[in-house]
Image 1: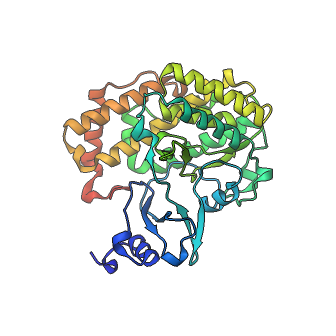
Image 2: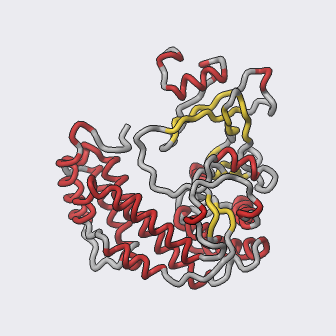
Image 3: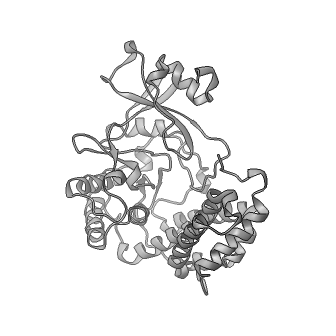
Length: 368
């Protein structure tokens, strides 16, 4: 393939490097088409460092609230405040992120496995560093209007905006396409009324910067066992306990290490942002409940889209997706106030029935 035959992102990567053979990619990334490139020799400012060149993918499902107008601007502002985050380099009007050479934490230690102490210590340090960054000390333009931002410390208001986003942008916005599937799984408007009641009454905690997506694939372990944190696109300012809840929800620590992480978070955040752990014992389970409820709506849509035409008949892929959704629904019974959860066989039938009427001509959003 010649550069002129590639996608706009690939052509841009070739233009930057000047050598198509030096372009690596596209990398696995849902929302962006990403390539790794070296800069031309005269422009190399960091030894043999390589840089990420990326373009947003079109027709993708976006299920997370965004706070800052630019990830690169945020990284630049955090450069001297957060340890081991990608450098940002401006080249011919483009803001490129340094590609961190190494392996993801998930590749080395998969979900459910313990994280070695020296790496866990660096995660705890990150909690403390982000807790020390407040909106008053972070001069980066935000996307949301000031009137849509809760007052500092209003954890209830922060949670209400998260619930409102999930309700409006994930559930209501997809009712036209996925409403029949939601209904067969017992999901309706009442679920959000019950969710609001479930999470009401959070204690006040002073707000700080949150990465908000700290899972094993967003940590890179380099050759010197340094832990780098990447993909700050979902970062926002809010309740520090939301960071811990999201992290625990995504990381799937073994129970004994989960307790260590909670204690490490408590010490690090309280030292950096006094009062930032107030009421955590009561509120952690409530916020985890929101995360489990959020996963129901996002994962129902994602599983259906991922299956596509393959879901027109029962088979191993449908059975696996149904089993996953059964587990996700079962975990969210309390926060969503569900009376019952359909079994895997019923979920599989619902997926097949929905697919037969909604996957004509591969027209689903988010498909490749």
